[in-house]
Length: 334
Picture 1 (cartoon, rainbow, N blue to C red):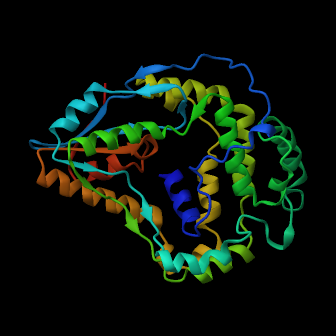
Picture 2 (picture 1 turned 135 degrees about the horizontal axis):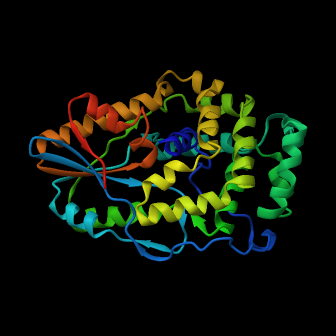
């Protein structure tokens, strides 16, 4: 959900989202390093399914994860079998911010330079000296000689750097998994229910102005992204393989610098968001909307199916715990 929330806050503007790949130009890419471990390829099933039930009504949940091996092909016979039996599919939780076509055209001039630091500042100007010094070798390794990036806000530079690091490590955001599930749902004409919330975009012009003029507390986002690439690449590959094999315990055992939380906080706590009453408590509202949709599906259908990120399935504040507190039986995959 963290990636989705950050993406939403970025898309509100609308500008590049955290989940979007922004690879450096080919002529600027550094040579790809030799991998230190072998990433799993070919067909892989991923983890088993979580089961939420009350009486003879069941909601099956598949846990998605990112990053995953680029050349892995996901296929789960268990998922395909249960989807074939399902009367309803719950799309992943999200927040939607829609701007009409004509309204979008009027906002285009305001988008010029939206990714740049205010007042023409560079990364050297806005980052602590030690953080900037760490950025230099990672920039050379993953991005190359693109000096225009030096004028972008740290949160967007972090996005570009992270995506480039994943690519060199043989990893991807793992969007093919959801694409495959959506394809199965479409082919079988399964009823699809959106579980997202809609954000108010009536005051977009002011939001854009506030964003372009205001500062972001995004140094922590940038710093933790550097740490992730400095120390966690090999562990990312290990976790990606663990998901492909269905070994959730291995993923949980490997901690890592949580740059997505830091980057989300930079956006959510920014003044331009605080100035918009309809953009408050987004995380809590998303969870409430999904839990409500899950309860409705469990009430209406014998069998329903949903996808959630592992971060939404695990931990004390998980969606599963919210359902458990309402009296539903929760069974984890073996």
